[in-house]
Amino acid sequence: MREPVTAAGPGRKGRIYTLSATALMTAVTCILAPLSLPIGPVPVTLTNLVIYLSLYLLGWRCAAVSCAVYILLGLAGLPVFSGFSGGFGKLAGPTGGYIIGFLPMAVAAGLIISHTKKRILHFLAMAAGTALCYALGTAWFCVVMDASPAAALAACVLPFIPGDILKMLLALLAGPAVRKRIRFL
Image (tube, rainbow, N blue to C red; front, side, top):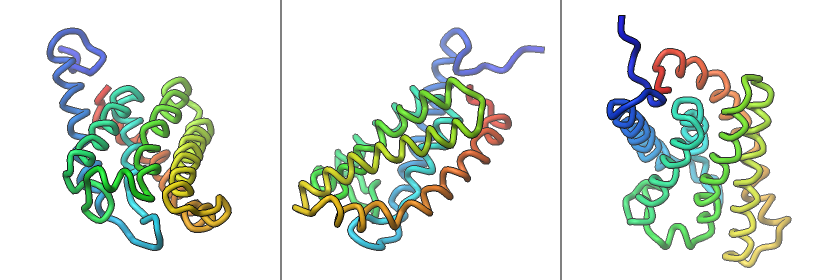
């Protein structure tokens, strides 16, 4: 019996499979990220959940590529950001730092997730990645909106912590289970 072709496998089929899986997760991000709940200056989205699932399904490198392509598609004007918006204005606006922060979030969390099997470390990696995204986004928000760090944290971070913890737990539970069944890598 032949072994399934995987992203880590040799040859052209492995590369095509990897590119296809990365494109698929980019598409999932582009579909789910615009669905948002506007609760203040920063909306609640599913973007970070999809990115964390991508880390499990693609590995950190391909998940980072998927995230970067998502950001570039939005920068090009496709309505893939919250509220079905896109374009340079969205990245230059108050929430742009959070959008850009998704990329270092994916890399930071993904590096740790890919090097350990301990779920508590996976959760801590996602929490650290989310904190990095919060830091970049909040700093950007302060500059663009001329807000104090305390006001920005109160409006843009504190309301999101419970939901983001829930998304991390969901990714922690679903990611490994889905990975076993799909076997992208």
